[in-house]
Length: 288
Ligand code: ADP
Ligand code: MG
Image (cartoon, rainbow, N blue to C red):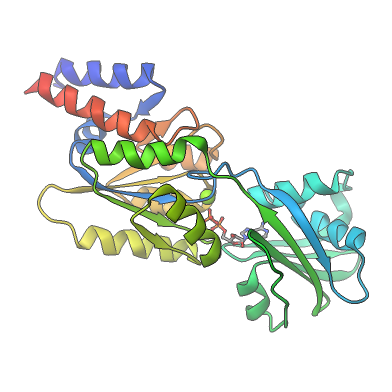
């Protein structure tokens, strides 16, 4: 039988907006020494805004934004949603054919008989398209039409107000190692990570690279030590499953992430992770 104290701990957590899916996870939280974060939607708001449009020769801003919005219209990625919102007009459901979302890269779709690519530098490299890197901070989405470079959009996200607090609070509960994993560009990752005081930053990762990073950290553990991973997106599901303790940001997180996680933070506050560890400590003190 499960000691009553665990129910107390799980109840206390749920009253704080932290859903713990079993007493074993509450127990495991006690031994978490490393917390690994996804960036987008976890430490940042994941609410991107298009801040600049750079059409290539022969392309207009309007046409570039329209093609980008069409290409992204079937994606639920926060980058995609920001482009569709910036376009602001309705998109016919049948305007896009052969839609293909390439994880960690972007989109390939057929629009009005043309093949449109919308995604990062890695997507352009993979498709052999010469691109120009625009100035300025932010995530860059490059466009290509029928193999020709068409220009780029700059998209900016904001750091969550609660994120710096989250890293500091973790240090107070004895989590000395914080790591950020992201598929985003290194420049964006360094900017966010340094501002928040994250210890280790790994950028330009594909979903499977994130799993490898967790496996690397898992293999370096000693004793009872546990590793927690915190994520929000569909892409994060394999990583959530691989970590000792998978934590989903449930506020705006995807259903798949919430389902794959052991613990769900029901609000959008990553500082709740330190609160959960605090509750785990107090629960252990009662149970033993
Ligand atoms: P994160 O690790 O920050 O959550 P993802 O793994 O979801 O990021 O995506 C990594 C990168 O892949 C993004 O920063 C972006 O450059 C590119 N990307 C992914 N999905 C899309 C999309 N729908 N449209 C354009 N670019 C995308
Ligand atoms: Mg994410």
